[in-house]
Length: 382
Image 1 (cartoon, rainbow, N blue to C red):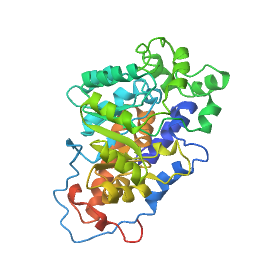
Image 2 (tube, rainbow, N blue to C red):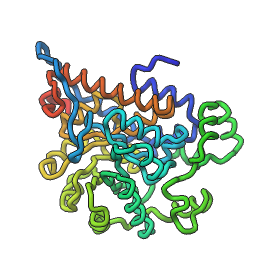
Image 3 (cartoon, rainbow, N blue to C red):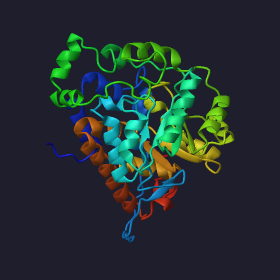
Image 4 (cartoon, helix red, strand yellow):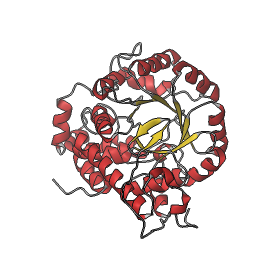
């Protein structure tokens, strides 16, 4: 087993262990991938102020996100096909999040179902991410299932009314389970750990959908259904309807513009997430970290602002918090851990991020994450 010191080590190991189509699905963006790359690289431009001779004892990264206690201002982001990075991937990630004391967010397009994850999380609440489909009856039942499973927040994604083109997915013929073409078979033969895991689980389809939609009983009928279901007519009126149906904490994901942020405030949502869908939708949009300050300035006193996109370290988390984010989300960072080492890999990713966050906060002269602000950043770099 190689020595794992950072998230990049996990990425390299995941690339070796996960079949190409599923690794590429996680590690890619739309079109030129310019926004995907900027999400990560724009963090590097923000410099930290090192402080010395400060008492660094009794540090804490504990805080709250939407009124819920968290061990650090981090949640696991909703990611589709997580159960194809590693067998039972959503369940394993939820377990790791529970141990780490942070929220786990389950995607509508997960392999393990809401009920699967609920059985494994016990009394630890998890969040559910909702895509809006044309089939409103299905959406209502999906919301009701999330309530019954004990989800403590609904994360409504607003930036996937239509799907951006990701060249790698087209080239790889992405599907779940994978199509048994000769190139796929050859590639999977080099991933014995993954294959053994998938042979040992019954969860290989979209668990929240197959068997829950009339006429969708297998992956063939599912592909036809999903191609027609993402709703391009999604509007703020739908947000109002969903908020009423849900009745609990509501987080809106996919905000990049200050005007849309104000609409989010007006909707009565509890929080918004500054996000460009990991650079997988509008290529050429600003990175999430560069969009964050303007949205915080516009609505940060009216609604809780979170941030998602490009976080690969605890230092990135600290920079986002310094710029006004009350919470952050990690997607690829935990997927690399999952693909590399299963549940232990997700745990390792979270431990790495927490340690980097804690130490960097101390080096910047702060001992409580709640006191972190722009003063820890070098002026002119953000």
